[in-house]
Image (cartoon, rainbow, N blue to C red; front, side, top):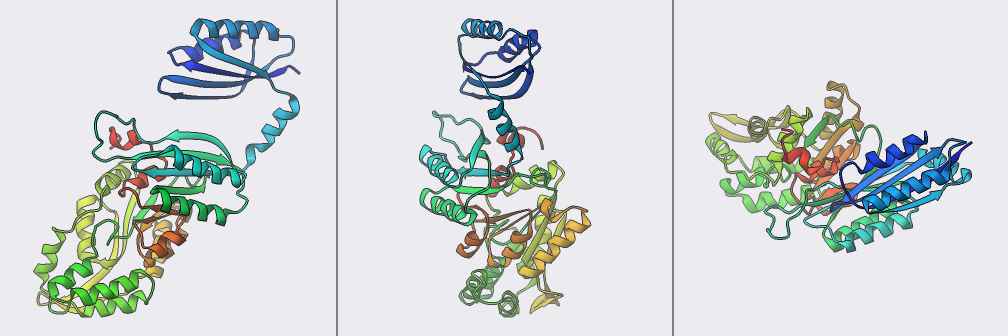
Length: 407
């Protein structure tokens, strides 16, 4: 059996650096057991774990590596690795892995330190840290500032509930979104993304906007707030609110769709996901006339919402068919997964209200978007500091993948 050696190389990066050092190792027939590299601001940190075959001259390899390091003006650190230590490292490769994502307008050392401390308290080891957002100019004020890093950790949390609580406290105190989920084959193979509509895809509750036109805005808004906070049954509240819309003209419904403001980042999210082959759906307790408008505008594949009854061009105050509430949204998500022939683990659900919790809780990735407190508390993942485009970062995409030409 030969020797096992860890070689760490650090310094100013330059083209051909990896080629030169691996060429030296190749001369001595070494086997590469592990290799990793990171470059930050043109400075490299390269690690190579190698097995040197029995009979090869370790001192000669050491000498050649050091000489090449001197030539390239990089620091070299070479350390032998004993067999017991190596085998312990090998056995640890099956440990559970999680992805932690920090997302906000900016990332500070204090935020990273706070998150890293929680990870250490839970006996989790940080294996890799990756920046998902682009480089930031210090001379020009960014128009739409975004900062996101992804941390890959290994190990089983000592207390996952306490860890979630600590992350929520950091989020509240430091104004940054922190998500974490198990890293598995499903997390890298999502196929279907469904969204709530009101206050998620659009910055409005349509029924409240219609109520204002009908002159019953305050009354309907009060019922809406109670329903979204989970204080009253959604179906009951919905029927009460719709009844108050009796007498609205169909033309007023059509006019309102053109004035509804889209949520920040909606166009980027939908165009990116469609360009990458995802199926997109709207599962809404709102109305079909808005859902159909967004389907045509943004390219959704599926729309499920409630349909107002209109007779002679006037709203009757009734809806036709089954009312779509929280439980129905969850059932529809399951049906769509079966239709697309995928696992429920390959789905993503995004919403803001209490009636979105059932679909958020069963999806492979459930996301609370600028959500009510009850939803933020129960959802594992939340976006509160940025727009809906934050979803792309939570899915592990680098900014270059959706800003620079994939769609």
